[in-house]
Length: 326
Image 1: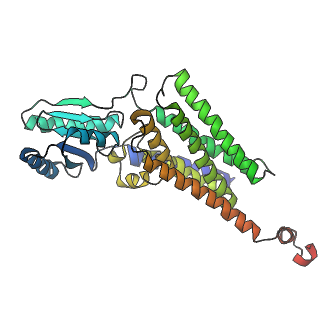
Image 2: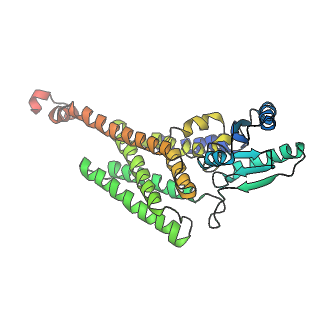
């Protein structure tokens, strides 16, 4: 009974502990903003703002609006300020909270320059998704589908071959891709762009979580369930930037954002739905890395099983000498 209660007790402590630490007091930390222009006025403004707004903002310099727009679309920066016109460019679909934070900060900057700040959103959130959170629920459903499928197949179903198990995980990925995109698009209109790309990412999310959980269970047993929940949910969601942008969370989650599978899946979905896939390459690389890790865990478990002949394993269980079993 005590062993069974460890899991819910851990969740009761870990979820509020990690989530509140990450999300309860968001504030900018090295949030990227660029000043447009290379003349003397722009260069001097960069120097002044860098000294005044650090460490909350990381102020850079860019030659023209087109370059700044490209950086906004790849989410490398959160805002671009043109001192010649008093215009601040933001990408609301990248994070409404980040756009609002940059806007508030540069209202004071424009006021100090004797200007009225004009805000232009180059990637506004669509009318069907005002909070910009649809991708979170689509991606989280896919990750949980892969995790639960692998858990059930390994702990509740016996006698499956590896080929059958992997086939079921792949099939579940296809089902999840169809169902989640259908619900999001047809029932709520929440995902209207790049449906096939979104469905492909959902399939990858199911396979990633499924292989990780399956390989881990085969290697270390049911304890992998706790490890997977920590990686995929407890650390994965706060570090994804889906609820609060990672440059408004503690530094730990910024570092995790570049490595965890949940972060890669959710970030890829955001970029696909709102930005036509700009900057998605790094996310796909991380997803591929975790798929390879899951496959590696499965390979290690089979390698370990092959090192002990079945007869000797049975003899060890029954307490007989290995020779007698043979």
